[in-house]
Length: 356
Image (cartoon, rainbow, N blue to C red; front, top):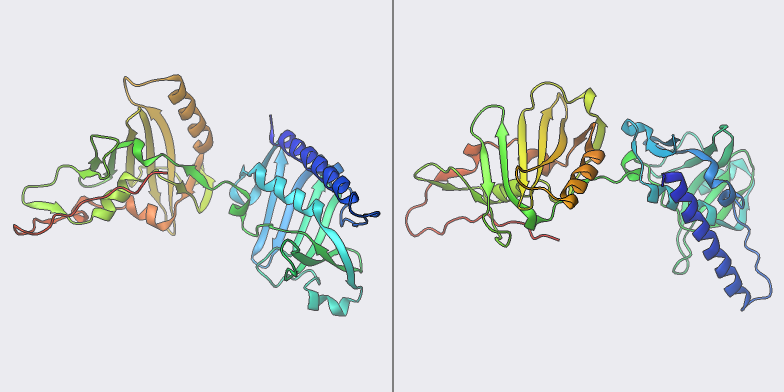
């Protein structure tokens, strides 16, 4: 089932919900007249080919190609169908409360003057069909402070029209490309991790492991005689490299991930999953690529399915990690140890973050 089918199914459910709501409301009132800003949007949502949102910080273009939605500004990374569905539903549900003005000199008061946009929030949203005909072309102005719970709204104007309206309904349109994707790369439960080997291109490998899934700390291996762990937080972080791992930016791997990686982290789980992170620092930013396989002698249908799902997600992409995760991949063994404390000093333990 492709993303277009999922969106259409969700919209059908939404329409049925709206119909139920109307019937229920008619039990309490003899007339229901709520003019929608785009009354035909639900009928035409399945024809949508492109969603374009503009703000003062830039433009985000979400396009449908071969039945799949992707974000152009992220090299065509798959868009989150749930986010697209929510955007269509929220725009379709906007209803006009009142006309505020039809005078262009009053538009700036409401924030509906259009280009050039002056705010970081989304100021224009356009939805086009496969023939590039406009389904939605809306200038979104200032937000109206909710008078009662659930009564949020915005001042809006349909592009090319004079009237500016107060429209009631929630709008959560993201102005950044990553607002339109699922930024999670991988999230392995902390109790699954058995061993992590961080091998820099130069220098000694860092090995952290634990013998039991119930253990609450990782042990740093190969500590020289007379030394002890000094950076327990970093040891713990290396052990949790694939815990709640998200990205801040994504590009095609071919553009940045070439040559020898600066470091490679191999994450092994107790049940046989192996995840490999390759670290490629570039002039201004560092990227990572990932791939997954299984340990020798450990295989199952469930594990094979998980590996296929993970590789389908990460294959061909290079990610920019949050700074705390990226910095772990630059760690050197010498940064984790110090001369052993004199007798009587409390040893340092590397406690693993709690799983979820």
